[in-house]
Length: 97
Image (cartoon, rainbow, N blue to C red):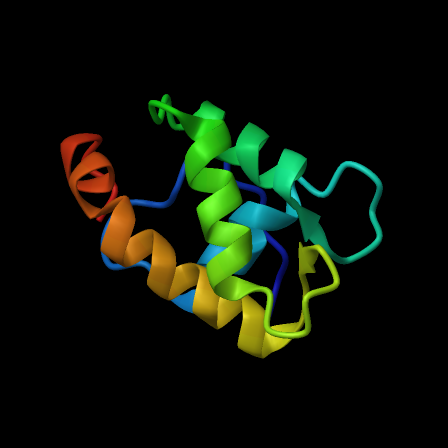
């Protein structure tokens, strides 16, 4: 699979792999984990209101091992589910879901 960088979420139905690729561009320190601050920047790129609050909730919902970040397939899948539940209206409004 080729790595694709997205400036915004891709159009159409989003897969976990596409979500992971989109998130990867916000991994500022390239440690393979998405911190709350990095997730906040990702949400701000979508013009999500209260991005800091939703980033905090997203990391809390996805961080299974409580290390303060989202890493690994299971945690990214949990974050993806959180985004679908809590950002669905925003993604639909932008035409990205």
